[in-house]
Figure 1 (cartoon, one colour):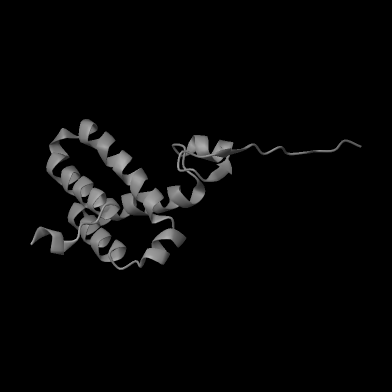
Figure 2: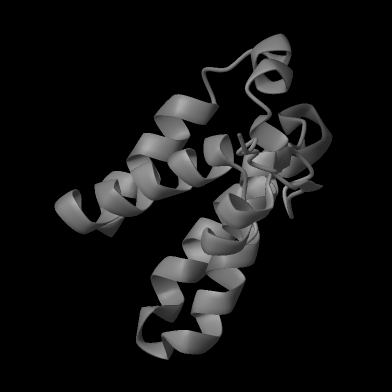
Length: 119
């Protein structure tokens, strides 16, 4: 009788989360959760266009409290999106205006400013 054993190699994904190596390798170094979030946004952009994605981001992210941001690991996800759009800036020069809007928005979410300091 032979013991059939499956060995799963776990690794730290590019996003910093622990994931099976085969999954992470097949999904650009992301864990399941980060890849799922990322795929959802790409689908939203394809179905409804660039403006819908920008509106979605402002509505969704600005409504999170600081404790919710930590719980859903929003900062990690924003890092992935910044990397994605920086690569697309090179790949798709015709979409430069849109991509720069997304990068500006994402960077402003990472480092929000205080309106009082602008007065």
